[in-house]
Length: 272
Length: 324
Ligand SMILES: Nc1ncnc2c1ncn2[C@@H]1O[C@H](COP(=O)(O)OP(=O)(O)O)[C@@H](O)[C@H]1O
Ligand code: SF4
Ligand SMILES: [Mg+2]
Image (cartoon, rainbow over all chains, first blue to last red; front, side):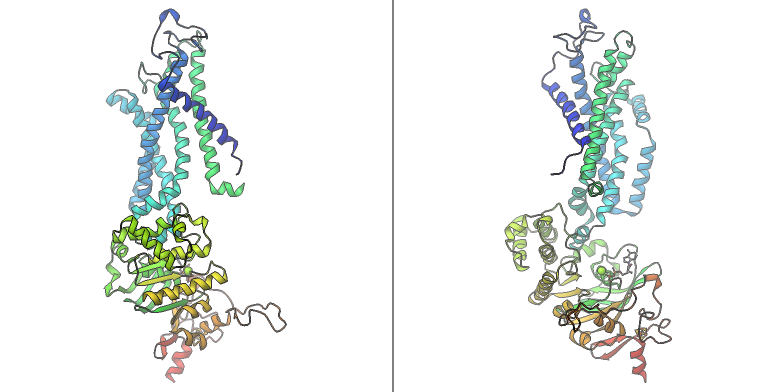
């Protein structure tokens, strides 16, 4: 078997760590992430508090773990939701062509031009800030991205002889999209989803940092960062830990996506 | 059963198919020959209702007496596989790499005939046997990359036969295969057409294969049907200069392309190559490459001239001697 590219391996390791920690937090954290204890605030690292405690005496490790779970959940829901809608629109555009295709793609352009942050602020203004609204905003930016990738890949597959053979067998556009197009573009979609996962993690952190995402007392790397900001001189480590977590997660999914692309893209394979 | 009356296909003002006339009845085995770019695939796609959207079609096409001019995609889908079916040129490309071949072959049965999966599977199995696939049980579960070109072409033939079509179109079914396999596929198609009393349109530029498989032949060049007649007669005594050139270009199996000293001889070919569509003369498409061209050939279109019952060609030489 061909050697796996380095970006794929490093990405896979980082992603395993982050996902593993998020999964572990479902059944075990060293302390309850929300329990405050003013008497032990700003505790240094110790056997009980591995990375110390924050300004309210909460255990930092427990908070980081709970925040990892929050981050993964948001990214997963947003990419699945926005991705499925985008893929469905892309398949539809490619299958029908003509004005439907033009229309969907113009809408995608419009969606692209519309920043997620603005959308999140609008949702927050109307419905109040919440994690749900942040998820919706991040899902929304994923729709045009997946619609474009799907349509471009699907258009290539529509020119294949096996699609002509399926048409010659009397199958319709939607059945062909499901049975022949989708499986053959799945690799491209999975690559995109992995990369968008990284983007979604970053977006969730940014929205929570701005107070538009996870609301107290829920743990989020972005919110930990914003709370630590005012204490930068007193306890800089409280900003560094969530920062490192964000970087690790984003880098991990980004590298994994790039690596998957290198593995699955036939043009690159042939060039190698 | 299927009738074409001056069917033309234009891309802009370039004609990929000009005034094609054809009648196909049950049990007919018709060969269509011509160099690449002569419009053979376009003709086949028209019969399937699958001409590209950019092609502008004129003329009449009827299937089972029904004029297909008003047919929607939905109507065509009812025709495909049940009335007309097609085998494509590239067996490597015509099977979905991610789908088990058995599932592919069962698709049209599940779609058109409401068979249960078990019934469809049983029929796929018997089709695999009919088209000469060994170990059909095991083959049904395989992916295309596990099969050779010849086996894949047999799978595609089984797919085309899935709903028992009245007409099977095979578009250069043997071009991508090596000679021995090509021969067996040719014989298979011929046998299937006879045993099932099914019409066969066999498109090829392999004249030997067409001679084996068909009774009637149509020679095409530049979108025109230039000569037609019983296969054996047309190949023995061609009347159109293009057909003569095509026969001269044939690698004769008897001589095996070697000269008297046993050295490889260059095959005679028709001088020049098929010009692009928009570069074709408006009169006789063959003008410019024709060795016996007359002065007015490039501008005036020769009419189809019957020379014997069921035989004829479109060439000024014939129409003029005919008028004398
Ligand atoms: N989609 C298309 N757009 C423009 N021209 C086309 C298209 N498809 C086929 N043609 C032209 O139609 C002509 C006939 O092509 P084709 O039917 O494929 O020939 P053959 O099968 O005999 O090799 C060619 O000159 C080709 O360039
Ligand atoms: S019509 Fe003229 S150019 Fe055409 S084949 Fe006959 S002789 Fe040649
Ligand atoms: Mg062709």
